[in-house]
Length: 235
Image 1 (spheres, rainbow, N blue to C red):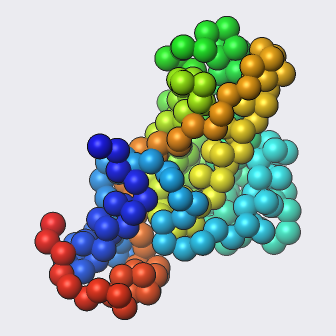
Image 2 (cartoon, helix red, strand yellow):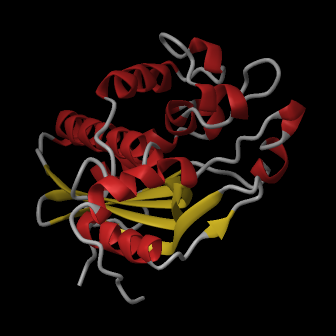
Protein backbone atom coordinates (compact mmCIF):
# COMPACT_ATOMS: atom_id res chain seq x y z
CA UNK A 1 0.00 0.00 0.00
CA UNK A 2 1.37 3.41 -0.98
CA UNK A 3 1.46 6.02 1.77
CA UNK A 4 0.08 9.54 1.22
CA UNK A 5 0.27 12.99 2.78
CA UNK A 6 -2.29 12.17 5.47
CA UNK A 7 -0.19 9.18 6.54
CA UNK A 8 2.88 11.41 6.75
CA UNK A 9 0.99 13.91 8.90
CA UNK A 10 0.01 11.05 11.19
CA UNK A 11 3.66 10.02 11.60
CA UNK A 12 4.67 13.57 12.45
CA UNK A 13 1.81 13.70 14.95
CA UNK A 14 2.94 10.52 16.66
CA UNK A 15 6.54 11.69 16.94
CA UNK A 16 5.53 15.13 18.21
CA UNK A 17 3.14 13.87 20.86
CA UNK A 18 5.66 11.32 22.07
CA UNK A 19 8.57 13.77 22.14
CA UNK A 20 10.62 11.98 19.47
CA UNK A 21 12.93 14.86 18.57
CA UNK A 22 16.24 15.01 16.71
CA UNK A 23 18.65 17.89 17.33
CA UNK A 24 20.44 19.13 14.23
CA UNK A 25 23.99 20.47 13.92
CA UNK A 26 22.90 23.98 14.95
CA UNK A 27 21.24 22.76 18.15
CA UNK A 28 17.70 23.15 16.80
CA UNK A 29 15.09 20.49 17.53
CA UNK A 30 13.44 18.78 14.60
CA UNK A 31 10.91 16.03 14.06
CA UNK A 32 12.24 13.72 11.39
CA UNK A 33 10.96 10.87 9.26
CA UNK A 34 13.81 8.80 7.85
CA UNK A 35 13.25 7.23 4.43
CA UNK A 36 9.87 8.88 3.91
CA UNK A 37 8.06 7.52 0.86
CA UNK A 38 4.58 8.60 -0.14
CA UNK A 39 2.38 9.87 -2.93
CA UNK A 40 2.43 13.67 -3.04
CA UNK A 41 -1.34 13.84 -3.36
CA UNK A 42 -1.71 17.23 -1.65
CA UNK A 43 -0.01 20.57 -2.27
CA UNK A 44 1.15 20.86 1.32
CA UNK A 45 1.72 18.81 4.46
CA UNK A 46 1.34 21.39 7.23
CA UNK A 47 1.05 24.87 5.77
CA UNK A 48 -0.65 26.11 2.57
CA UNK A 49 1.74 27.14 -0.23
CA UNK A 50 2.84 30.72 -0.73
CA UNK A 51 1.73 30.97 -4.35
CA UNK A 52 3.26 34.42 -4.80
CA UNK A 53 6.71 33.19 -3.81
CA UNK A 54 6.34 29.98 -5.84
CA UNK A 55 5.69 32.08 -8.94
CA UNK A 56 8.84 34.14 -8.30
CA UNK A 57 10.94 31.04 -7.67
CA UNK A 58 9.71 29.43 -10.89
CA UNK A 59 10.69 32.57 -12.82
CA UNK A 60 14.15 32.36 -11.30
CA UNK A 61 14.45 28.67 -12.13
CA UNK A 62 13.44 29.42 -15.71
CA UNK A 63 16.21 32.04 -15.91
CA UNK A 64 18.79 29.39 -14.89
CA UNK A 65 20.67 32.04 -12.90
CA UNK A 66 22.99 30.72 -10.20
CA UNK A 67 22.79 33.97 -8.23
CA UNK A 68 20.15 34.54 -5.54
CA UNK A 69 20.15 38.28 -6.22
CA UNK A 70 18.32 37.48 -9.46
CA UNK A 71 15.27 36.06 -7.68
CA UNK A 72 12.39 38.43 -8.59
CA UNK A 73 11.38 40.63 -5.67
CA UNK A 74 13.06 40.39 -2.29
CA UNK A 75 15.52 37.52 -1.94
CA UNK A 76 14.33 35.14 0.81
CA UNK A 77 16.56 34.95 3.89
CA UNK A 78 17.15 31.21 3.45
CA UNK A 79 18.65 31.73 0.00
CA UNK A 80 20.90 34.51 1.31
CA UNK A 81 22.01 32.24 4.13
CA UNK A 82 23.15 29.39 1.86
CA UNK A 83 24.71 31.54 -0.90
CA UNK A 84 28.39 32.40 -1.02
CA UNK A 85 29.62 35.95 -0.40
CA UNK A 86 28.83 36.87 -4.01
CA UNK A 87 25.30 35.44 -3.96
CA UNK A 88 26.16 32.28 -5.89
CA UNK A 89 24.42 28.95 -5.20
CA UNK A 90 24.20 25.45 -6.72
CA UNK A 91 20.48 24.74 -6.43
CA UNK A 92 18.79 26.57 -9.26
CA UNK A 93 16.73 23.61 -10.43
CA UNK A 94 16.10 25.16 -13.82
CA UNK A 95 19.84 25.33 -14.43
CA UNK A 96 20.28 21.77 -13.18
CA UNK A 97 17.86 20.23 -15.67
CA UNK A 98 17.82 22.64 -18.63
CA UNK A 99 21.42 23.84 -18.95
CA UNK A 100 23.85 22.27 -21.40
CA UNK A 101 26.49 22.88 -18.71
CA UNK A 102 24.73 20.21 -16.63
CA UNK A 103 24.35 17.89 -19.62
CA UNK A 104 20.78 18.80 -20.63
CA UNK A 105 18.94 16.52 -18.21
CA UNK A 106 15.47 17.60 -19.32
CA UNK A 107 16.22 17.19 -23.02
CA UNK A 108 17.65 13.72 -22.40
CA UNK A 109 14.45 12.59 -20.68
CA UNK A 110 12.28 14.16 -23.36
CA UNK A 111 14.21 12.31 -26.07
CA UNK A 112 14.20 9.03 -24.15
CA UNK A 113 10.45 9.04 -23.54
CA UNK A 114 9.77 10.15 -27.09
CA UNK A 115 11.73 7.23 -28.50
CA UNK A 116 10.79 4.64 -25.88
CA UNK A 117 7.63 5.40 -23.86
CA UNK A 118 8.12 2.21 -21.80
CA UNK A 119 11.62 3.28 -20.75
CA UNK A 120 13.08 2.86 -17.26
CA UNK A 121 15.99 5.16 -18.09
CA UNK A 122 14.18 8.51 -18.16
CA UNK A 123 16.01 10.14 -15.25
CA UNK A 124 16.98 13.75 -14.61
CA UNK A 125 20.08 13.84 -12.39
CA UNK A 126 20.20 17.00 -10.28
CA UNK A 127 23.23 16.46 -8.08
CA UNK A 128 26.80 15.46 -8.96
CA UNK A 129 29.81 13.84 -7.29
CA UNK A 130 31.73 17.09 -6.77
CA UNK A 131 28.84 18.60 -4.78
CA UNK A 132 30.78 17.20 -1.80
CA UNK A 133 33.18 20.11 -2.34
CA UNK A 134 31.09 22.57 -4.33
CA UNK A 135 28.48 22.79 -1.56
CA UNK A 136 30.94 24.73 0.62
CA UNK A 137 32.88 26.68 -2.00
CA UNK A 138 33.66 30.31 -1.16
CA UNK A 139 31.61 30.23 2.05
CA UNK A 140 28.56 28.63 0.44
CA UNK A 141 26.33 26.11 2.25
CA UNK A 142 24.25 24.67 -0.58
CA UNK A 143 24.30 20.88 -0.89
CA UNK A 144 21.68 20.12 -3.57
CA UNK A 145 18.63 18.50 -1.92
CA UNK A 146 17.19 16.68 -4.93
CA UNK A 147 19.26 13.73 -6.11
CA UNK A 148 17.27 12.73 -9.17
CA UNK A 149 13.77 12.49 -10.62
CA UNK A 150 12.61 9.51 -12.69
CA UNK A 151 9.73 9.47 -15.15
CA UNK A 152 7.57 6.61 -16.37
CA UNK A 153 4.81 6.43 -18.94
CA UNK A 154 2.33 3.77 -17.90
CA UNK A 155 -1.37 3.45 -18.75
CA UNK A 156 -1.14 6.70 -20.72
CA UNK A 157 0.00 8.61 -17.61
CA UNK A 158 3.28 10.41 -16.99
CA UNK A 159 4.37 9.26 -13.52
CA UNK A 160 6.99 11.15 -11.51
CA UNK A 161 9.26 9.63 -8.84
CA UNK A 162 11.25 12.22 -6.87
CA UNK A 163 14.32 11.20 -4.84
CA UNK A 164 15.72 13.68 -2.32
CA UNK A 165 18.39 13.53 0.36
CA UNK A 166 16.58 16.09 2.55
CA UNK A 167 13.30 18.02 2.54
CA UNK A 168 11.75 20.54 4.92
CA UNK A 169 8.10 19.51 5.29
CA UNK A 170 6.82 23.08 5.66
CA UNK A 171 8.40 25.31 3.01
CA UNK A 172 10.59 22.93 1.05
CA UNK A 173 7.94 20.36 0.18
CA UNK A 174 5.48 23.00 -1.02
CA UNK A 175 7.94 24.77 -3.30
CA UNK A 176 9.58 21.60 -4.60
CA UNK A 177 6.24 19.97 -5.41
CA UNK A 178 5.18 23.04 -7.38
CA UNK A 179 8.42 22.77 -9.36
CA UNK A 180 7.94 19.06 -10.04
CA UNK A 181 4.41 19.68 -11.27
CA UNK A 182 5.73 22.40 -13.57
CA UNK A 183 8.33 20.04 -15.05
CA UNK A 184 5.84 17.19 -15.42
CA UNK A 185 3.33 19.40 -17.23
CA UNK A 186 6.03 20.81 -19.49
CA UNK A 187 7.13 17.28 -20.38
CA UNK A 188 3.55 16.35 -21.26
CA UNK A 189 3.26 19.38 -23.56
CA UNK A 190 6.65 18.83 -25.19
CA UNK A 191 6.00 15.12 -25.71
CA UNK A 192 2.75 16.00 -27.45
CA UNK A 193 4.61 18.42 -29.71
CA UNK A 194 7.23 15.80 -30.57
CA UNK A 195 5.08 12.66 -30.80
CA UNK A 196 1.53 13.96 -31.35
CA UNK A 197 0.47 11.89 -28.36
CA UNK A 198 -1.07 13.44 -25.24
CA UNK A 199 -0.37 11.84 -21.87
CA UNK A 200 -2.30 12.46 -18.68
CA UNK A 201 -0.65 13.81 -15.51
CA UNK A 202 0.10 10.80 -13.33
CA UNK A 203 0.89 10.62 -9.61
CA UNK A 204 4.00 12.16 -8.12
CA UNK A 205 5.82 9.90 -5.65
CA UNK A 206 8.00 11.55 -2.99
CA UNK A 207 11.02 9.69 -1.58
CA UNK A 208 13.15 11.52 0.98
CA UNK A 209 16.10 10.44 3.11
CA UNK A 210 15.15 12.98 5.81
CA UNK A 211 11.73 14.65 5.81
CA UNK A 212 11.61 17.02 8.76
CA UNK A 213 9.85 19.82 10.63
CA UNK A 214 11.97 22.47 12.37
CA UNK A 215 11.28 23.60 15.91
CA UNK A 216 10.17 27.05 14.73
CA UNK A 217 7.25 25.32 13.00
CA UNK A 218 6.13 23.15 15.92
CA UNK A 219 3.25 25.59 16.41
CA UNK A 220 1.80 24.24 13.17
CA UNK A 221 1.74 20.81 14.74
CA UNK A 222 -0.14 22.27 17.70
CA UNK A 223 -2.62 23.88 15.35
CA UNK A 224 -3.26 20.84 13.21
CA UNK A 225 -3.04 18.13 15.83
CA UNK A 226 -3.30 18.98 19.50
CA UNK A 227 -6.34 21.20 19.25
CA UNK A 228 -8.33 18.36 17.73
CA UNK A 229 -6.87 15.36 19.53
CA UNK A 230 -4.56 15.32 22.55
CA UNK A 231 -4.20 11.56 22.81
CA UNK A 232 -0.70 10.09 22.71
CA UNK A 233 -0.08 7.95 19.66
CA UNK A 234 2.17 4.96 20.15
CA UNK A 235 5.05 4.57 17.72
